[in-house]
Image 1: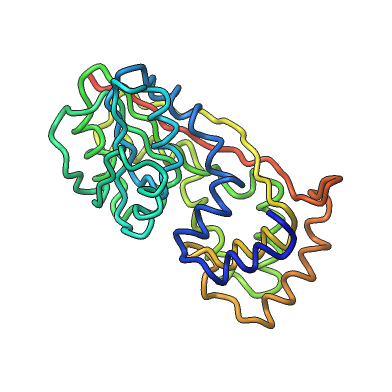
Image 2: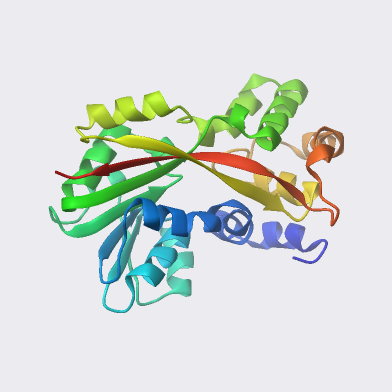
Length: 269
């Protein structure tokens, strides 16, 4: 993205478009193949992506199942689905909640969900619903961010927010990392009646074109810092971030660091 274009993107785009244009390439798109493999998605399968957002994982799964399979993306946010539909009109995009999936029992060969479980109103019910629509002998795969402390770049940013603006702002940013604990994930799965659940840890990368791009994107994110910082605070944050995050800046000026992810998997009996 050319210099300065990120501010134009943010000023002219909806939250769903900002998510798709900035966060999907920087973080989310890379997980499609890993999630498809974790759920043992195969050619010809019918797969449900719960909390699909703008469709990054749904599209990746569609590539794996091929023309004789099907990929269904479900999300409660119609703006997210509107962006997703522009990418692939042949995929079935469904508006609905994870806690009340509008699908029949045992109707999918795999169920996947990435970076949504931490935001569900009732995580136990959501997992129970995912298992309900899964066929016996088939697999579930659900990804969440590991603890923020385990990602050096995001941990530094979270500490900076705490130092500059206090714990309330820091807590807003930490929301996506709320389930970064393997034992807690297994407890939720057990409560939901998910049999033989396992959690594996995988490491990906976050990459934005610059510190400015990262901070601007986070400020615009409706699910974390959106509406939290006023202009003077944003200007202060940008200046301080240049110092606090400089160790993560690469030779081309982009900012890059690892982010570990926890993937909960289970096979339906």
